[in-house]
Amino acid sequence: MQIDLPVIWALIIGLGVFIYVVLDGFDLGIGLLFPLFERKADREVMLNTVAPVWDGNETFLILGGAGLYGAFPVVYSTLLPANYLPLMLMLMGLIFRGAAFELRAKARRTQHLWDLAFIGGSALASFCQGVVLGSVLQGTVVVNNRFAGGPFDWLSPFSLLCGLGVLLTYATLGCGWLILKTEGDLQRRLRRLMAPLTLLLLAMMGAVSLWTVLGLPTVAQRWFGSGLLGWFLPVPLLVLACVVAILRALRRGAEAAPFLLTLALCFLGYSGLLISMWPHLVPPSLTLWDASSSPSSQRFALIGTVIVLPIILVYNALQYRVFRGKVREGDAGYH
Image (cartoon, rainbow, N blue to C red; front, top):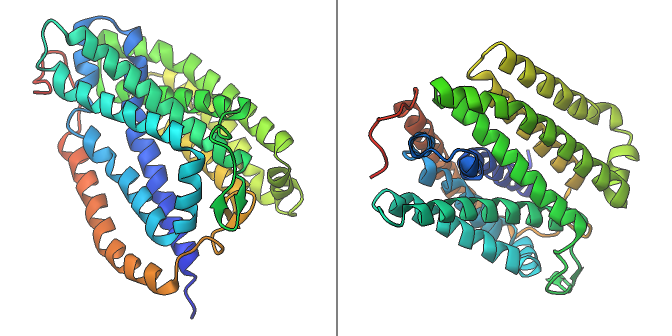
């Protein structure tokens, strides 16, 4: 039986990106929620919910980038120059967010400045990730397997809308995570915040989806002209079902359900994205087979990935198991 290596690698990279979005999404979301909670003790609790795990979450960003470079070098060499500025700003945001984690715990007089760095770094990284997503979806000018567009092709109303969409997604994820990990008055305020965030996220998902279908002909053809609409239709219906379930879970005081259902929302949104792009990695011109490295390179990299990926997954699962449970005011902080 012939193994389709490009498909396997697309699945691995897609899995890595999705896990990154979920795991780093909720700790970036905590940074986005920081301005709404000015009490120092509340902010300490919020940070302590992710302090043991936040840096491990970024492992999957490295996995996705390294896998893309090894398995689909043409994608790497076209999407990077097409999105240099938002990617550099994203990395700058992640650096400020990471530095704030480490330094605000030691600072006294300048702690408020590191809080601002944490908020700004989280917002910048989240927004730029959405802008890059929008840039990829709207299409990249490629000639002879090289980027042939301008330095600001990534900047468009659609990419900015996607940036706002990712901000809302991460804020909702962060709110769900904090409901799971906190208690008392802080948890009650987070519950009140979760419902409007979820409704705003639903509206944003609808706006991005509508714009994608109406404004991008290749995506419209994929959804409505391929004869597979009956298979794709459950995605938006399940999105609505998840939103209703989140609102009901909040009313009955559930703690884990809002977060788990928000994860399901993210998965459904990601599924819609994959449906819209498949089989292109660089819409509208490069499919995953067009952009693949040689089979020998993909086989060699796959051997290492098969060994390393389970270790990464087990390590991440263990860290969440070790640090499970509630985080309370007065618990040992990040030092």
